[in-house]
Amino acid sequence: MKRIALSLMLLVTTLMGCQPAPQAEKEAAQAEPAQTYQWKLVTSWPKNFPGLGMAPERFAEKVNAMSGGRLTITVYGAGDLVPAFEVFDAVSQGTAEMGHSAAYYWKGKTAAAQLFTSIPFGMNAQEMNGWLNYGGGMALWREVYAPFGIIPMVGGNTGVQMGGWFNKEINGIEDLKGLKMRLPGLGGEVLSRIGGVPVTLPGRELFTALQTGAIDATEWVGPYNDLAFGLHKAAKFYYYPGWHEPGTTLEFLLNKAAFESLPEDLQAIVETAAQAVNQDMLDEYTTRNIAALDSLVNEHGVELRRWPDDVIEALRAANDEVMAEEVAKDPLMRKVYDNYRAYQEGVWRYHSLSEEAYNEIRQ
Ligand code: CA
Image (cartoon, rainbow, N blue to C red; front, side, top):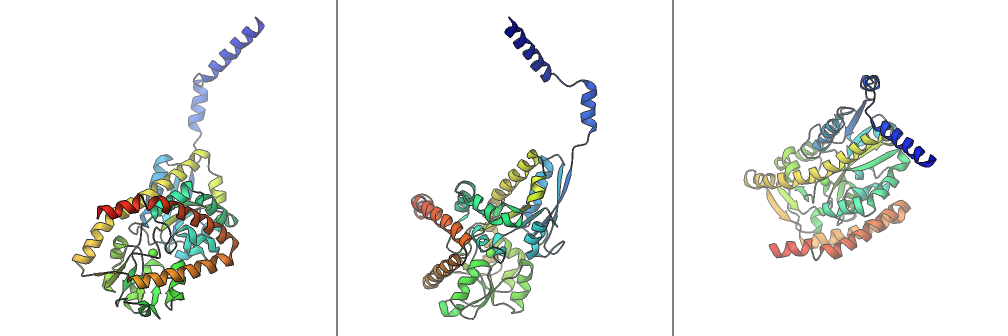
């Protein structure tokens, strides 16, 4: 009997706990303003730049909407708060709570960072997303950025990029010797290996550098972004495909302390908005590149050229050498690269008889 009475009491207490709060308590809860957060987000792109620069803008809009204004984010273009290539330091030091950039710009901080954007002859967008989100890639990325107090999140993908803009035709490997080309990351190392001169420049400087002859050639992204920069006005030959960046992943960088100071629901909103923007960018590039390529060829007289097979073979061989040397220098880079390669080989076994096989039969 006693037990039953106790159970009944517990039940009543529990039920009472579920009752709406008394009016006074309710009003007190409403009067207490929810804590709000105002963050700065610095980027490596011109403000509102099509594609790349819209990702942080859309991210900020989504976070604002989903959080009901509890987390508001101000986006700064390259040079507005910090220069394009100081985004990593700004987030690490807490000058800004967030950044939007590309991990391969930080190879001077940690060599393994290069593997999270895109590597020559590496994985495409679909494969990168698979590796990062389900194949262990993101855990490794977090490990690589942890010493800097930064948490990385996916921030978009351009798809396979174009090979770049040249003032002359590239008919053989000798045409790349002495060629001064804007080509960041490992692609630049590969170019250097076969006698070219790689240069790293932020996007906003490319047109002037190419037009004045400060550089002989440049890659940037693909038709949509390249048209926006007017690169076709400075060079005529447009090479494909972008062997150096086959599935360029952009990144959000989060100051770890700032992220961890958020309540769990806002953390979830940030992560969900990053994933949404990651897919959104790929979808937008896929669509807008179609019209941009048509415009470049039909309205601006751009000459499309496919890389000659022997040039690709030479670049691939140079890339094998560069990667072997790079991973030998840095144990963390080896650890990430081994994981990357294992995933790439696995996904190739499947994609060679799914995606690739399908692409062949539909042509
Ligand atoms: Ca590029």
